[in-house]
Length: 141
Image (cartoon, rainbow, N blue to C red; front, side, top):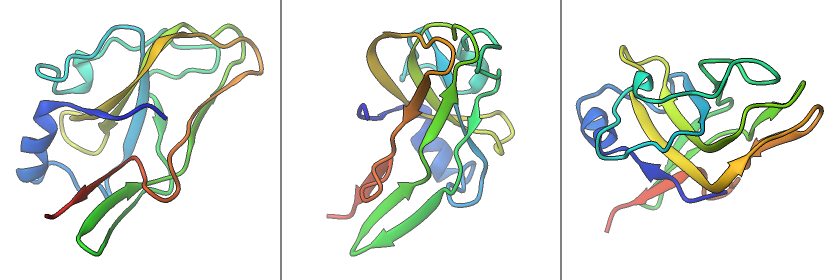
């Protein structure tokens, strides 16, 4: 899995109680337009790929999300997220995580796959979340 890049607005939003990562509905969307970590703040700033052929506008819900702390380290984890193409799915390079519960669908982070990806009928794209380290972890020094 690519390293998450956090939107600058995420830190402020987290400190202002716009996110409860353990209970809010978090979703992943796909885009072929580069996100801008310093200026994008909400889902409407992201140009999603075309609806259809295995992709639904608004994205896929990240299931089984857990928010835990162990020995001073916070972990955000959840189930792998998949899309199964039912035709040729539009090309995408980035997967963007946002908070669907937050009033303005605030952005959290994105993954950059480095190249445009496209899947034909029956092929599956998976965001493979590390079962031990999660999507990300934060440590207190």
